[in-house]
Image 1 (cartoon, rainbow, N blue to C red):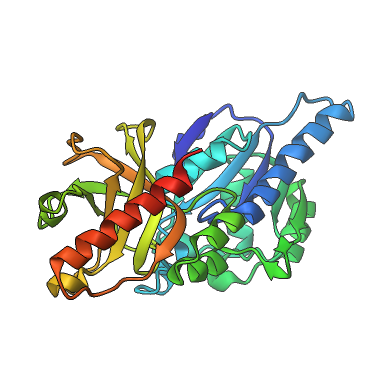
Image 2: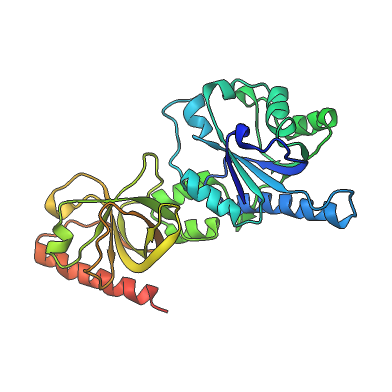
Amino acid sequence: MHRWYGLDEVPEDWGASVVTIGVFDGVHRGHQRIVGRAVELAAERAARGSQHARLPVVVVTFDPHPDEVVRPGSHPPFLSTARRRAELLAGLGVDAVCMLPFTYEFSQLGPDEFVRTVLVDRLHAAAVVVGENFRFGHRATGDVSLLAKLGEKYDYTAEGVPLLVADGVTISSSYIRERLEAGEVRVAAAALGRPPRVEGVVVRGHMRGRALGFPTANLECPPHTAIPGDGIYAGWLLSLTADGEEDGRWPAAISVGPNATFGEAERTVEAYALDRDDLDLYGAHVAIDFSARLRGTVRFDSVDALVEQMHRDVDQARELLTP
């Protein structure tokens, strides 16, 4: 799969393609539906005996989040890093991901100029697939109807895919962020189609976990990361290569929030790989996949009471994570 950062990286000889556009934060089930429709449309065109072979599918997305540029300081917590987003999109059968740097100048493009610059001149869009609530152009003045109208001018088709509704709830990135904030990682996982994940670099903390018999990987997460609400969780600790590939995975008990027993106010994300005290992950890029919330954050009256509860947490995590 091709990965381009900016339109300048699109090959000069790139031919016609089916394009889908969106922030796609989290690449949740609703996003998967939109991208799936683009892949389906590319296959339909080939099946109809078009003069072209199957058209390649290109996903256009943005970094940073447009809200941070249009309304500085309003960046929503993100559900996936830009690299993780590209990886997830690649797994949906697309042929290329084009990550556009979203700048103030880019935000000033009118709808017609956006279409011509992004969809027509470089990607040669023959068809465009977006969510039905898609907006584009300066001040978000463009919608699906205008996108289709401009398609008549620039010779492409456009369609808006209805939002995904499951159990009476519209699946959206905002909904998933809300569920994560509430600690409802299983609900978030159902909407994402996989466990929610946070990534970060392992840094040295207060080393209390090791002293208590539970050495933890203390994550320093990128700014704006969507982190589940304070509590204790069961999940998986993963080590990642420089390219983001998984090269180690361990069942884990995870703590999110301040260490109230020791009177600390700093919010941390720490993972204890079950029954492992031999891992040296300092400086490593790791990820945590959250499977279930075990309990809320509690201040204990003594260290002994805390350690006793930690043993119970680990036993519960092991029970949940062992096949």
